[in-house]
Structures are given as structure tokens and as C-alpha cells.
Amino acid sequence: MALVFAPRSVFLSTILCVVAVAVVTSESVRSSPAASAAGKRSAYEILGDYNFPAGILPIGVNGYDLDEPTGKFAAYFNKTCSFSLEGSYQLQYKSTIGGIISKNRLKNLQGVKVKLLFVWVDIVEVSRRGDDLEFSVGIAGADFPIDNFEECPQCGCGLNCDNGGAREMTRRSSRPFVDSY
Image (tube, rainbow, N blue to C red; front, side, top):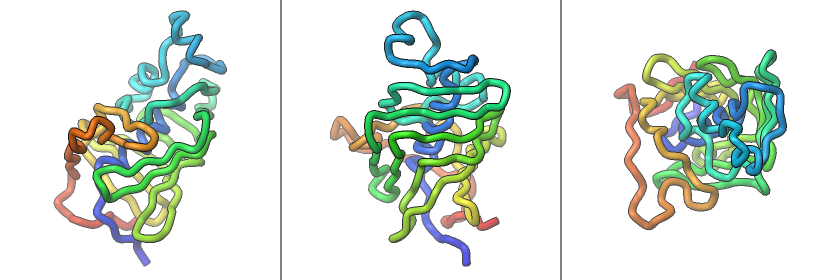
């Protein structure tokens, strides 16, 4: 049975945010906000090295580990980070998230969930294919244009933190439901 949901850019923003955490540095290093002030590149800047936009990572990462040779990463928040996007997707990042990052791919993702209908499902992989990002929950997935991820969501309020209304996200394919694999 395939999961059916109307994907939006919020779902993608959350997944891409996880990728951003993984790419925070090009060395195996534990980073902190103080390290950024000392001239070290931010996680958001490093994401570009892996061909991902900064907006896949929510604001609030307070540290990370990255083993450059293997791509294994972990990112840390002070506490669980949850938010809704465009009133349809609820996303949740555990206080520690991890996975393996490489150019155009984030796999074995752990600690990031999306609520589909009434069930929380793990986001397990994010891939970039040209100008699209593909998000997978295992048996189903959805693609979104990369420009939906120019802005990082915030814990608690997502992309609607200034009461100015959430930015509309578009979906690349014309099908209204998630693709099943």
C-alpha cells in the first residue's frame, strides 16, 4: 500500500535542513557557534559543497560532527525541533540527527520525521536530481524544485514566523500525490 499525501516544500525544507547539518564542515570536526565566529564555515555554507541549498536545514543547529572520508554526520539541536509547513506537513527533528552525506545525496537519515495523515514516518533519503530534490520515506517519495529551499525554517513556526504568511511551495510533477517506488 502506498502512502498518499499532497507534498509541499515544507517537507523538503526539513529534509534539506538535515543535509545542511551534515555538511557543516569539510573536516572531521565538532563545531560550535563560537567556531563560526572564529572564521570556520557554517553548516549552511558547507551544504553548497554537496550541492544542496541551505534551506534544507532548520535554524538552530548548535553543533555537528562530520567524517569527510565516509560522509557520516551528526547534527545537534538543544532539544527536539518541531514545526508545521504551510499548514499541511508537520516535521520533527530529534535533538540529534544523522546519516551519510555525499554529493547530491543524503542517505540513512535518522532523527527526522514527517507526519502523513495520522502517522509519523521517517524521512530516510534526500537526493538532488538537476533542479529537483527528491524526498523518500522508504515506500514513497516526492520531488520539489530546489528554489523552494532558499529559506531555512525555524523550530516552532516553520516559515511563518513573522505572521506574514508562509511562502507557497511548488511541486515539480503535476501529479497531486506522492510517487510510490
